[in-house]
Image 1 (cartoon, helix red, strand yellow):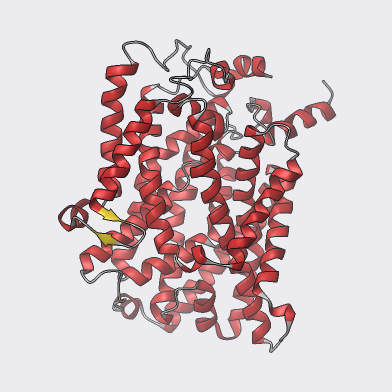
Image 2 (spheres, rainbow, N blue to C red; image 1 turned 90 degrees about the vertical axis):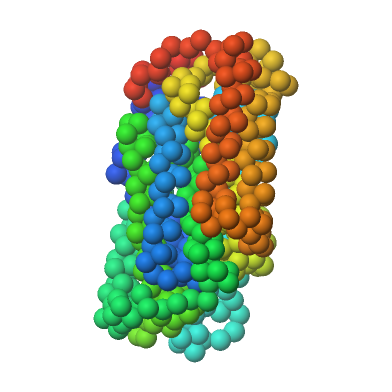
Length: 480
């Protein structure tokens, strides 16, 4: 096979349901970590830090964010190993747990739709940053339209998406250092203007009358962030050169670094009272403001590109004949949310709802992968007929869905995350809602699995023990 044909096959792997073979892998552990950091660093951790600062004082906010971003992610990062081992995407990797047909609905509803909501945020921040800079120089007229600049951000980001992972890797090599520099400068600026003791003394209004309840809400928001990557791991884990790189890149990039790099945004909000990071940076920036906001604009399209790739890849998996340009272009539906920024302006509610609807899926999926010892029948994943070992009952694993529903019911019994109303304060103020929901889902699934799946081998075909990344090449080659 010539080099040009090799490259064509590799590009198809990046844009389709084909499993990634060892020769298709372009991500080292370092580049995967940089991608994960760049995914969030331009927008979402700024908004998250600001939102946490509206809920609780500095030290509790740091603890809540560290816990929420890392503890749930530790289990989920095991999925990074899972996808790297088999070179498969979420659309297929989820079939073993939820069933061949149920996985489609689950990934579309809980993977693609939230990804679109995430995409809207960097586009909005890009538009507001440009608008703020132009107004600083007293520019007026149509050119200051934040929506128009949001469209520009979408176009830039989705062009990177269209070009694929190689372009994204290069974009992150620029965007990530720029954003880390920005965060460092902002931190120095704040700490030279105010002492740490002054910042820690700020007492925000909070999100509940009871300070403890407000703190637990902050934890729930952080958990929402931590579990929000459930359907994102595969897009990049599948093209990692090693399972370790997939695991640590996910945990460090989306977890530890997320929590740490959100702290400067907290500092900005404590000292300005602004929940919008753009307004906060403008308030403390002075002459530095223009430089800061321009640096912010450099990285936002890269953040946008990452979720755009996830959506396009997923749609191509479900609709193989869909042209890549159409799959990427589908992300322009997000312009509705750019025009009407309900998610951006209500980020805290978005996070608590995301935690409630996602944590139970995560608990069942991760537990199932562990119990399977990462084994898969690769051919069975791609077989959509009733002969597939993952067909279960009409393409649905009812035991997994019952476990998820048990977790959702537990969450709702404790509180309603869309309006932050706590129904059972005694439980909520001790363990929150997401932790017991995840625990119930995992326990219920384990019991049902042992009672109904294991005795009859339902969904548990006999497969060989998978080895390292390269060991699964023959099986994947058959799929091609």
